[in-house]
Length: 107
Image (cartoon, rainbow, N blue to C red):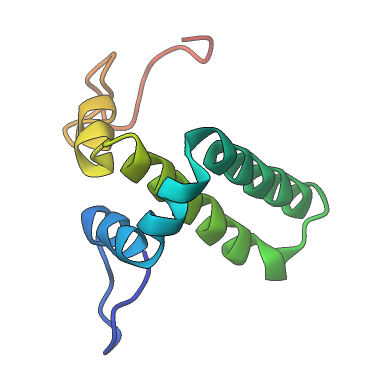
């Protein structure tokens, strides 16, 4: 998670709001299709860092992917915290209910 001034960490909702404060006007002007393309470019850069095992680049590329995902969520009026909690409930796997997940690999 990103850190606030003073060293405390941001939760997902705080991070999404932070990205909105920083970039929402620019993101709106760019629009969803172009913002999505930027997101995919960052995913590609992360894929390259993973493929090449570029340890120094991994954290930066992951942060970029998270920021562009938050930008898309802001443009599409998606609350990432709610979406994540609904898809990945804190009590266990959404399919099998177990922690850790006990679903077969193909599931």
